[in-house]
Image (cartoon, rainbow, N blue to C red; front, side, top):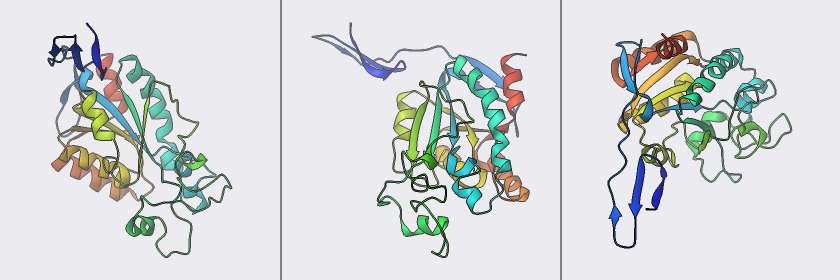
Length: 253
């Protein structure tokens, strides 16, 4: 009988006379990972990786951050870590979701408070302004600055979701996609740990998702004490942290 649905875990089976609402039951694939503050056991069938903001305007030497004098070396340091992880996760059929900042061209989805965060005194260049690189507007959807850096391996099977807030869960379709995929556990990587990544992790926790930060696959351009505080808060309130090698070793003990 025909199926209706875009996810193997969220399907109806239909006929002329009957609609079967019972979703397929997929046995769990349990994986034990060394983590803090406790080790965790997760179900690979219900796990996805969210990668935040690994975009040209943040990661590239010609991007917005670098044009402001920001040292982007901490950002670039997570690229090889992600490139080691991504092929392994794809081979396990774990969804990869790229959560990227992408303004409307007219910036009508950006409030004054967001614009202030990117351009505090109004005299600089912020979200949607003409980029110093000459490659369109800063972080405008479908512009060079909003594209995932070419240093990362992106596959057609990956999922891209644009955001317009520091949290990746506001005013977009991310939550709907994850629920349709049957995801309950979220791995986190990307940038900036103390900004968009942490805001997304917090909101994911508030929505009931399990949170596991892959610590060496995440970075920020802020001082080290800021990262220390974020990790402390994750351990206290929001979830768990691990390292990429611990994840890979759990798969191949």
